[in-house]
Image 1 (cartoon, helix red, strand yellow):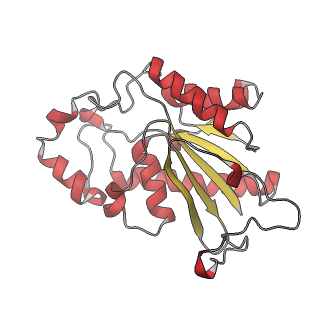
Image 2: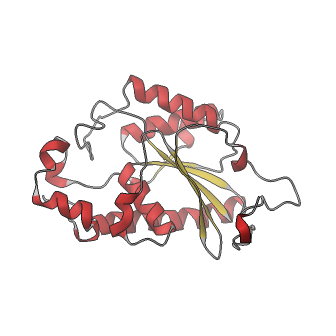
Length: 236
């Protein structure tokens, strides 16, 4: 049973009005840095076997705040391009209001599994989900092998990538992933067992993290049964 903490990066100057994508050199703005510090402080009590990040600056800076709060050198952050943003191709850097007038916009909204972004480096949404979910599977296996099946690790990534990972964990078709939200500096938690994943938190932007701490010896943490069985009646 490995627990994954999915962290979306904090705000940037482009977040919201523009589609940032793989825009180089785009870091957190003042608001984003404050968000990253607040999130890092919340997560400080949670033991992390690893902190993994998209290679993009805004994610790396968010991950740096997390490792600093744990007293860990920033050099311990492991970069994995598979958690990088969707390659939006020719859409990169354009205003969202302008993109909403494009015919492809409706496809992205209603049938994202069929969407491929324009341009030489444009990526299909289905391909982006596949690489991200494959990365999660690989990291789950690595963390469990190196730190035991009860270990927890964090991945700092991007909104659409996090939503795609959640859709997979929930057994949802990619065409349903637009029903999921992942706000800037939000925390989403998935606990992977041999039988099924459990979505523990989604788009969490505040509150206590006591339920993410390792259970005392002899307890299974209550709620997901530890062995992958769901507690009938909902558990305690």
